[in-house]
Amino acid sequence: VQLQASGGGLVQAGGSLRLSCTDSGRTYSNYLMGWFRQLSGQAREFVAAISGTGKTYYADSVKGRFTISRDNAKNTVYLQMNAQKPEDTARYYCAADGRTHHYSTWYQNSEEYESWGQGTQVTVSS
Image 1 (cartoon, rainbow, N blue to C red):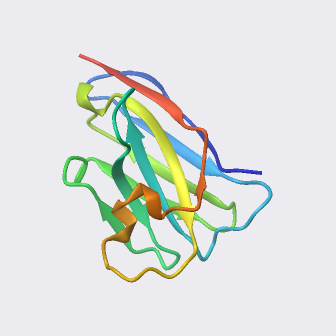
Image 2: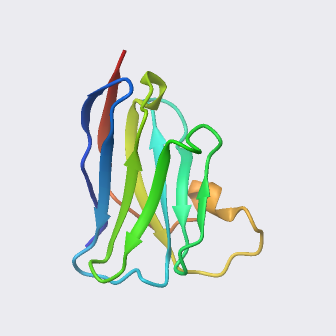
Image 3: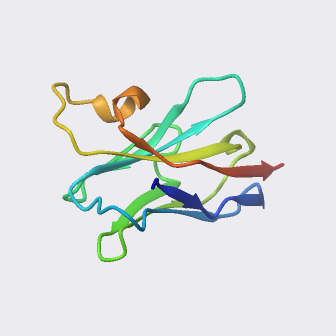
C-alpha cells in the first residue's frame, strides 16, 4: 500500500493542472504531506507541504502560483498549479510523514519523509 499520485499531463505555459495524492489503505489526517518534483538525474526538489492542521509551506519558486490543500475526509492531498512555466516540468511526487522532527524546516528535506507515491509527470510546453 502506498500513496498514489495522479493528475499530471501536458499543459501549455500559463495553464493549470491539479495533482491529487491519496492512499486507500492508510489514513494520513495527522501527517504532514508534501509534494516534491524531480528531473532525471537530479535530486528531488521541495515544492509544497501541508501539516495535519492545515499550515502550508511553499518553495519560493512556486509561491503565489501553486496551492496545496487537503481533504481529510477523502484522505487526499491536492496541488493546484496555476500560471505554469516550462521550468515546472518534472515528475511530481507526494510524500507523507507522521513522526516528530527536531528542526523547523524538516519538511523541505525529502529524506525526512517515510512514505512516497510513484509520481506523476507534468510537462509544461512553451
